Image 1 (tube, rainbow, N blue to C red):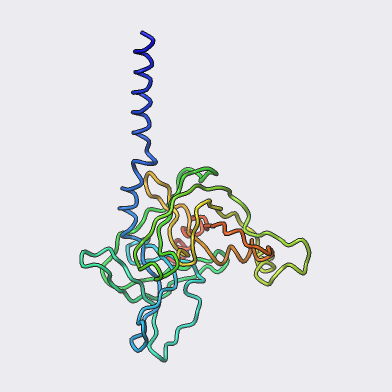
Image 2: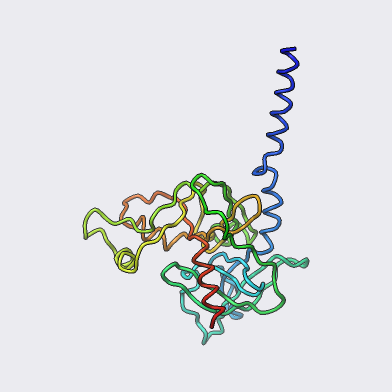
Length: 258
């Protein structure tokens, strides 16, 4: 009898492990997310290469809006030489497709930007707005790490929300404060997500999403946050960060009113 109970416990335990939603749902979630993730960059016909990547973005709203980091698009365009903003998507059956883009609105305080793309609507992501994000929650992010060095194919990393922490980390004394940190302190701090998974500069602007439904909870940020939190450190930690998605929802709502 004892042996039968032991065998039953093993079988039930194995069934529970096999039904774990985190491991079972992630491949399907990635499959849903990837068509919405795009490369953000610039196009210029007379240069080589003609398209230069600046970061990652993802489709939101009506399928013709793309969210990314403001710092991804802040470098001035050489319009006289024909340089223009563009995105590259791989959501079409024919493979990669380039689309012209323009800036709709920018939120510099939270390093967010909203673009408008031309052509047929792309599949938008779902923005998380229900249960609060919690420390220890499993998440993933998809983007284009290290730019085109690894090829313009979307790559997914998985981790957890390791901390929800203020963006500003003041220095021990005034001499350690740079202009970015001082400006952030004056404009008001806000909480950001610290991740235990490694993101790279090419991931900037990409979606951070929960595993089961693929709802976007944040936007990966590899420059803006690090300058605020790690500029006073002699050895940067390499920790990754994300801006909470509520600021993107607010930016989209403001744009809709205009």
